[in-house]
Amino acid sequence: MAITDFQSFEKRVEETLDCLFNAARKENEFAYIFSLLGINSGMEDAGWQPITETYSLMRDFVAIANAPFHKHTKARLLLLCYTQITEANYLYHVIYNMLLSIENEISPKVFSFLDLYKNGIPPSVKSKVNIICEKSEKLGYQRIKDLLENIFDYGIRNAISHADYIIYNDELRLKHKGLDIKKIKLDDVFDLVQRTIIFFEVFFKVSDAHKKSYSEGYVISNRKNKKGQNLANIILKVDPAVGVIGFQQSDPLPTW
Image 1: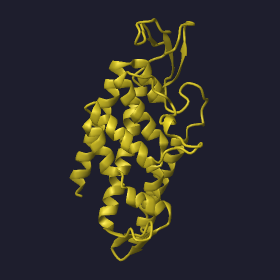
Image 2: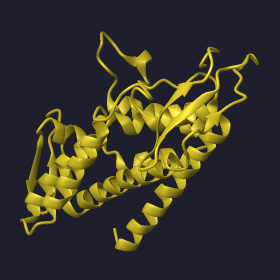
Image 3: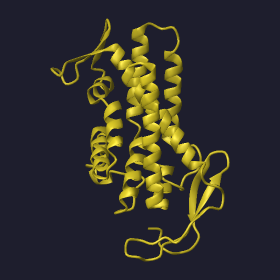
Image 4: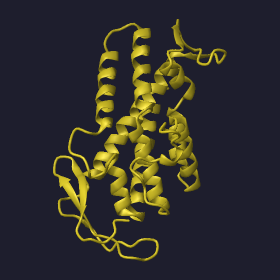
C-alpha cells in the first residue's frame, strides 16, 4: 500500500468516526456522553482506564520497531502490537454504544455485550466485531463495518495470540488449529498493522476533539424517555486540559 493510500485511509477513518459520533450526539446527547467516556463513565478517578496503557504500549512498540532492526524483528514487534490493539475492549464498547445511542431503543451500557457472557466468560473479540458490523449495517453506517473488516484479521490475531506462527523469509506463516495453514507476505502484514495503528490513532484524535467540544457548566436538559416522561438534567464535569471527564445529575428525576 502506497503512502498516499495510508493518507486516504486516515481521512476516511476520521470522517467515518466523526460522522458516527455527531449522529449519536444529535440523537441522544447523554447516551453519547456516556459512550464517549467509556468504562464506568463518570464514576472513576484518574488512572483506571486500561485503554491509556494500550495506547502507550502501542507508541512504545512503534518507537522500538522504527529502530534499525532486521525485518523479522520489526514484524514480531508489530504483530504483538497488533494483537494488543485488536484486544482493546474500549474501542468496541465505544463504537457499539455510539450505535446504540443512534438507534435510541435501549440505554447504552458501559460494559456492552453483557448478554453474551457465559459462566462469567466474555464473548470473543470476533463476536463483538460481528455484532458491531451487523448493527452498523442495519443503521446505515456501512462504513464502520468496512473499516473494521479492513483492520481485523482473525487468522493473524489468533495465530499470534496462541504462538502458532512462523516468520520465514518474506512470509508470515500461520499454523493455528493445526491444519489451518496460511502464508501472508510480510509487506501485507506491515500494511495491515499500519492501517490498524492509523485507526487507533485517529480514534483517539476524534474522541479527544469531541470531549474538548464542551465547556464547564454545560447542562443536558429537556430530556425525556421513550414514554415521554421527564428525565434528570445532566451537568457535565469538564477539565480544561482534556475536556469532559464525567457528569452528575442536577435533580432526583430518573437518569434513563
